[in-house]
Length: 254
Image (cartoon, rainbow, N blue to C red):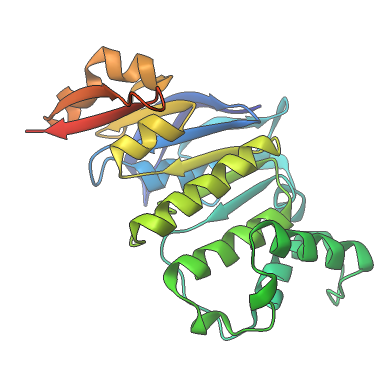
């Protein structure tokens, strides 16, 4: 269990998120939603210890992560930002970066590391791109490579900042399917997501932020029924059941 206790965080003393108390369980998907500028990415970075909180503490398995060595923390928590430069390297080498927290100097991979990278490539259907330069891939293919790197890092907690943004619908659905597979592997996936329908239909928990504070944190049904999404986004939200699949989808209008 990863817990945020009374977390206030921001930049240069300016508070962006305030008094956040939430927890993330392994084997679950949590969606962080809210309007632009409400503190979603700040929350993600703080929970991943990339941004030091102004106050409060983050507890992992009963201990504060602030006292955990950086290299050890990288074997427990991984973070994939939305905006990143594309390295001039092969798919295989980029996925191998996920093993760096486990390697000593001079970072020579062992047989176990190579086997884990090989499995990550196979799991995400990337074996045929193994020796291809990452810069030659499409946006969707590139995102799968980064997810393979995260999978190779083999952490219990995975933080993703808008993993489906800028992708076409086919690749969005593919990435969401991969995230569900990570959940099946027992990972806790915590992601910032803009598409409210995708959040409500694919996540186990929803954290709705507004002006840096948690408005509600609960199951998609609970969050939808509360009317909080309608109040925060100033939209109307309607649940629609697909007759053939018996699944709920959510339609939004002004």
